[in-house]
Structures are given as structure tokens and as C-alpha cells.
Image 1: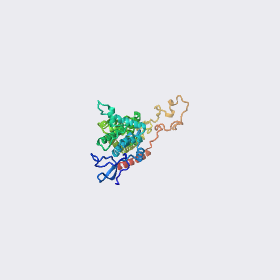
Image 2: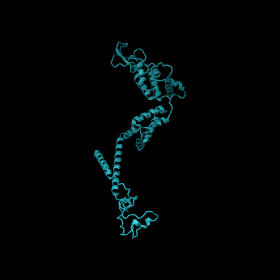
Image 3: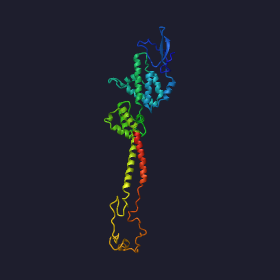
Image 4: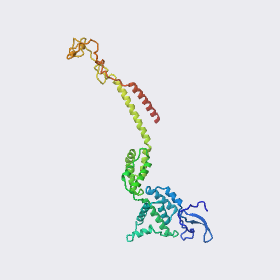
Length: 386
């Protein structure tokens, strides 16, 4: 037996199909197991033996494919591959429906197939009967694959069955669930699109393979993407007319450049902090003599030297003949006696006359040290960029 013989596949038992015995050539039912045999003319040829599905094949497909109710497109891809490689008969297709689908799912697929088969029926004919010829549901049509006409009907049945599976089962529409799928901060655009497509398959009536489904998911991808990605896409002229691949490429550009944008933000913040410290240092240096620098200088810096009093002039009433401690105006309404000249009064602010007395110098030394550290960091960053 040749080494490339196929394993047990989807064929019913029977005699080998002889190449050359059919008027239209070999009736290939692929992939079939090839065996060397002697034909009617005593010639050794390779014949194609038809065999049914094995139970291990079906169990393997069932265990490695998500349920049809959750992932209709995954099951559709599986059946599409089986049709292309195994070329199953009508009985094989019924076996697949019975093993891979629940009763409710199977009923939905068959209803979809009947509706598809009736499309294009003649207006003057019976659409149900015309559709039953293309997509028989209950009765085995007994198609003989050795005949070209029957083989074409079988292939038409296979195509309708795959399309019926692609339409998916009836599912509840829940737009809120779809709108709740938003891109996370660290999520890649591809992963976000996969979650969005899964939500559309589960909660929307759209088929993502047709134009309406593609347009709907593109709009959701734009509106529910991360803010920076959404702004980038919406700034593009004609962004609503772009394909999904173009939108995904724009989103990937923003996603890959996020690290660089974050570094630029950090650099700007450090520069602003450095400039703020420099400004505070300058204000501190210029305001050391502002608040409380002189007895009558006021706020905001030096306004000129203080006025000198006369020899016998009172500092309070500005009259001559007595000093401030002997001023009669200061003793009016007070029980205090005269104070000793030249000594400050107890309980009063000893700093009076030399500024406000509550001035706290700006910690210039600490600011200078902090600014020096930030300046070194800033120089290091500039050197790294070069």
C-alpha cells in the first residue's frame, strides 16, 4: 500500500471506483484511500476505496471545536474544511449534524439551509419543492457520485450546508453588551478587535462576513477604542471609508508609540519642575529685603532709606520736646506709667521698627541643592537623546 494513503475518511463502504471505467474519467471522492488492484483488463491500477468517518475523527473535531452556539464561525470553518478535503456524502453530512450539533442547533441549521435553497426559485413554480431538490432534509436522495449530474448536486448540497452553518443560530440581540466591550489601556488593537468580533457574533444579528456586519464592527472599533487611538483615527480624512486593515494599522502605530509619548511627557514635567525651582530661587533672592528689610520699607523690596527723626522729636506724634516713651498721646486712656527711656516695653514685639518680625526666610540652600540635582538629571537626559 502506498505510504501516502489517507486514513479512514468519510465514505460509505463499497467496491473500488475504477479509473477509466467511468465515461467521464475517475470519480474522485477525496481524500480516498488508494489501493493497488487489478481492473477488468488485468491491469494493475490505483483504485480509490470509499470509507466512512471514523469515530475518532468525529470525536476529535467535536472536542477541539467550540460549541456552535458560542462560536458559529469556528464550526463553519471546520465544516468548510471537511467539505473541501473529505467530500462527504449526504449520509456523512447527516452524521456530522447529529454528532457536532445539539438538536436545537441542528434544527436552526436545517431551517437556514431550506431558506437558502429556495432563493432563486422560479416564480411560476413551487419554491418548497424546488428547494427540496437542492437541499433534501429528511430523505436520502441516493446520489450516485459516479454520475456527473449527481456529483454536482452533492456539491451544491455541501455549499448550502456550509452557508447555513455560517448564518449561525438565532441569538438574542444585546447592543449594551457590545457597547460594553472597550479597549483596555494595555490591550493591543488586535486583541481588542478579537473581543469585539466575539461580542458581535454572540449578541448581534449581523454576519461579519457581509458588508453590513463589516461596517458595524468598524464603527464600534473606532468609537470604543482607547482615547488616543480614537483621536488618531478620527483625525484622518475619510476615516469612515477605510477598511478594517487600514484602521488596524493606524491603531497599531499609536499603540507602539505610547512608550515614546510617555517619556516625552515625563521630560516636559521635569523641565517644568526645574523652571519652577529656578523661579522660586530668583524670587527668594530678590525678596530677602522686601518683607521686613527696613523699619518702614513695606513689602516688595527696598523703597529707600528711612527718614531720620530730629534730636528731640517724638517718633509717634512727630512733635518736638519729648520722646516716644514720654508722648502724652500714648498715655491717654492708659493706666501705665512712663517707661524707662531706651528700654523696650515688655509684652510688645521687640522687632517692631525693624520690619514685621514674622518673616521666615525662604530655604534657599535647600532649593539650590534640589535645583542642582534636577539640572544634572536634565543634562543626563539631553545627553542620552543626543
